[in-house]
Length: 223
Image 1 (cartoon, rainbow, N blue to C red):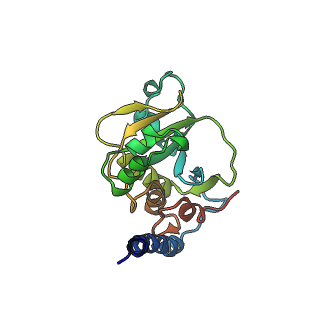
Image 2 (tube, helix red, strand yellow):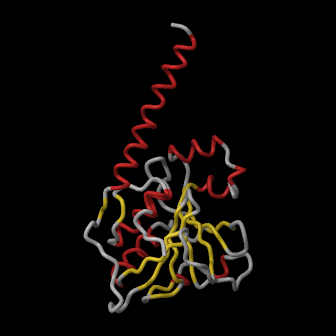
Image 3 (cartoon, rainbow, N blue to C red):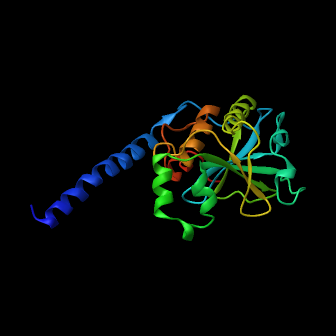
């Protein structure tokens, strides 16, 4: 067999799992879990507004620091920040591979080996927590109103993602920090799958499997 033919066959074989992955993402990302869920109406009491945030590749959950009897200051301390006293009124949570998060503060610093290791799930994970005081609702920061029980299920899911203990790593700025997380990141369980799982656990209508940001954001209407 000629070398060029062998190379072509090898590339074609390599594309089969990639095509299967993308096909599954497209299909399952459009099939809803909690299909009967509807956002609470205006008269309902005890609702909490959260935000689902994206930068186009990554998604996260943004919640009030204190709301509906849930006080995140019991777990996330002001003293964890480089400059204590910078506790935000909102907290943005994202989950992912530790090396990818910490070693690649910008996309320019992404290394192929870091991506490969993250996709096969060989390393530990972290929760990235941003402290925020204000932001504007838009297509990238989409508000979502939850009922009391739904909000409690959502926050319980996020809290359960923290590893035991209080392992803290400084973030990129004076207003963000990393905490050791549970589980392993992989091509099957991405940061966006984590966001989808959080919403699904709360009872919100979202895709069955959400490996890409678009698989999450299509279920949350833009303001």
